[in-house]
Length: 172
Length: 143
Image (cartoon, rainbow over all chains, first blue to last red; front, side, top):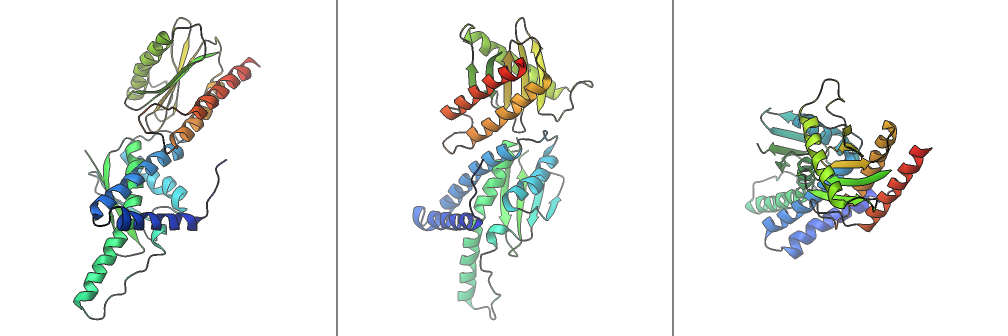
């Protein structure tokens, strides 16, 4: 019943959304832009989790809900599962995706041959832009988990592209 | 026949209540739905050994009152669907089927970007589809 959209449309939409919020709407306020993007992701995650948990029995604990995010939810969104899940059994989970779909088209910095200062500031800018693109998936994960009754905070870590890790901290 | 369907959010706030008969008092139906919420909570928190397993979404017959039977369904997102019916013998499979279709319609209504989560569902399409499902429930169980 649903209509389908090509994947490149989604990629372009997300790229344009991040660039619009960062460069036009909140031009000099990256924290506000980040929060707005994350809030959009939150609502999307909220609604998607409603749809993808429709035929499943209820989850008995937090770990099952996180496993659902790693397997079913991630495969519905990105056609693959999370590659690695780590936990400290005290409410923190690290979800690692070795080839995050929305970052595959993003250029990866080559390591500089010499440590010139201009290079490092450019690299820092690039890192900032890359991290902006991750607020949306962080919001999606946070929205999905809150809808399942698990309030949490989600942050992303992109120390080695195209792999990326999402750190989920469950609020006690 | 179905008297009333209700959708209750996870903070026990009503999201949608619709009655399908003119005769009965709307307040009484609200009261019945409200009482059934307690039964839902009790079923979820204290599973009986003989009852359905803890993780099922369909909770079954919650409690029979003088004229009505009340069925419950709890989704993964802690949203409760309550069905009040006056039929004397209703097949379990029919009610499960009803809730499945109702869940699909609910998911479509919630996916509306103009819908604010936690507020009442105001979509006319949702109301129309719900009444279609309610009418077809009556037909299938009569046959």
